[in-house]
Length: 442
Image 1 (tube, rainbow, N blue to C red):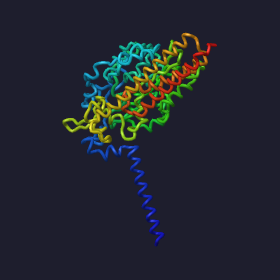
Image 2 (tube, rainbow, N blue to C red; image 1 turned 135 degrees about the vertical axis):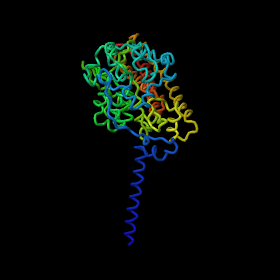
Image 3 (cartoon, one colour; image 1 turned 90 degrees about the vertical axis):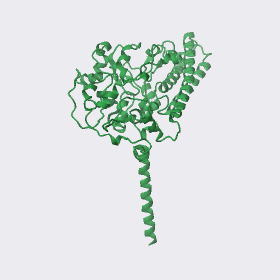
Image 4 (cartoon, rainbow, N blue to C red; image 1 turned 90 degrees about the horizontal axis):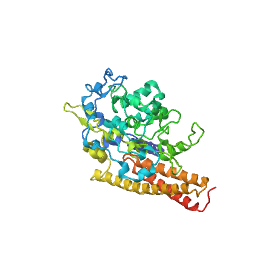
């Protein structure tokens, strides 16, 4: 009898532990907390309230067979209306080179030293890429700027990337739009489609591990490079685990180029001789490596749920920062016990930005000292290459944080780690310069 009681207690204990494990798995890996625990705190609408339509796609009117926003306006009037909203906040460009003058020195010899302005949103993609002072001889610069370019690559292959920029630009008809995220299937119950071929090539089956509402944005809001062979846009990893700045740097460092050179570089800086990398905008990588990805996706934080007068619930396609929309901000407040979420996020961003400025100026000073050492020919080439390697690494980690547009809000731990790593590399390079000062050039 006693043994039977002990057996029953053991079974009950196992069941309790299993139930707890399932709850924790839901908390950390899914939407349990978002949909259940905090539903009353985030307002009356959730994704479950959206009545997704299953309708036939309209006949595409785009000359290339792309179903554009106008084609979908009758089916999704509310969504299409929000896509066209242009607010004053998007009508200007913040000049980063004016705001942070040290960038001109860091990017010396590269296009970003000529012009580097803030992105204004999907409504301006074609206009801004056409008017930038940065040179773009080939069409690969149109990646992610228009669905028409994506469709062109899908129809004709990677040879499109090396076509003349202006020739291809003249054929583009629409800014970022429906096709980019839905293909021509936007009526199929809100189905999200990976339309950019390089995402499929890079991630393969591993794409299934990423929430479609995050991967949809992640097709463009990523770190990428242009392949040396055909200038195809490509992602430097194949799994989420390999999205760290350390792993991406190793990917670039070990890449074998067509001429046999080991190590990819976006450009060789004239004054230092350093083979430098230019990080792009790794919002997706930063987000997926942080705490938020387990319970949220990009749409939760940047596409507020709204209800029309007839009761239709839909995701607004006016992409916004949570700090500029009360509905989105309530999503943050559901998990953060903060009396003022805006002030809380601003404090994070100010801390990251202050550290960026400090490290950026230190990196610029290192670049100047390395330039002097090269010009004076007072160090051996072996010693210079040792310092150049540290310079390359320091700039990579700094840039990975600087160009990520959340300013630390997506993942403040990663942002600070990148900046601290950059500073450590700077210190090591300066020490190497000092120790080699008395070594005559060979």
